Length: 338
Image (cartoon, rainbow, N blue to C red):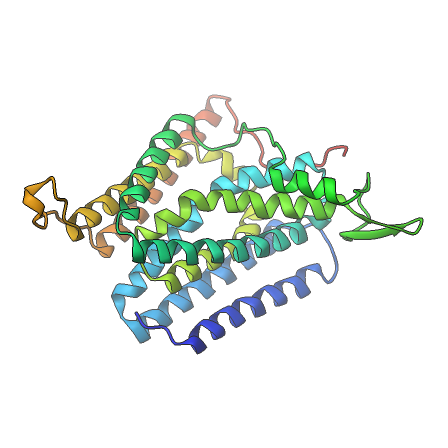
């Protein structure tokens, strides 16, 4: 897939324009995002992703379009775990509801930049070292096993990461929020506010999730352009999903099982592709191995099918639990005393 420089520039420019429009419209007057508003924005970003995938289909063919959609759906579904962590961070920092959208937006912009670097490094490593596929594959299988055992991160407690702690040491931080400001000047001295710290926390927390999501999408497509664009569209719609899902998120009780199956499937796919394209001197006399590969059509079908089954099964179980008097916990973001 040959991508001219102007296509990269146009794509990144379009993404920046979308983010600027979102920032201008939503944060022009800070307010608590309603479910209806979040739903419209989620639908808008999904429509943008579908349109982008359609353009890939038109100009590059169904193979690459299928890879984009498979990557986008996988990244979007894996990002649900991010939402639990976002909730924990928002609660830990007692972010006012009217400013939560801006925090998510800036944090995700930081994550996009850092993921772009991560993707570039990953693409170079894959191009130069074929054994990276084995590493990615086995790592995804291990991650799938761990996720199936422990589930999503709703019960985790937030601990500040190294970058956030460094920021606190480098800059004096105010005790309270000052509206949506990240920097303030008090008594002639410049301070950062908790708003600045929480943006770093959101951005770096999302980067940690790239450790499994980036290898997963490289298992579906080896095209850096598709990897980046799928990640970008998934991240851009993520913050609206945070406000939209509400109490629904905790009803998806089997989601961790579904995500584990998807990660395990992609991990196996990566290992099979590596065995198919590499020769191992200690097996079969160094001759190419007759190993089957999994095409993108089957991959997309498995991903969509697993998500559909686990979602329906989760909602059925939650409804039965409610009928028995067992209710799911609310996912409504809360404010705590900072």
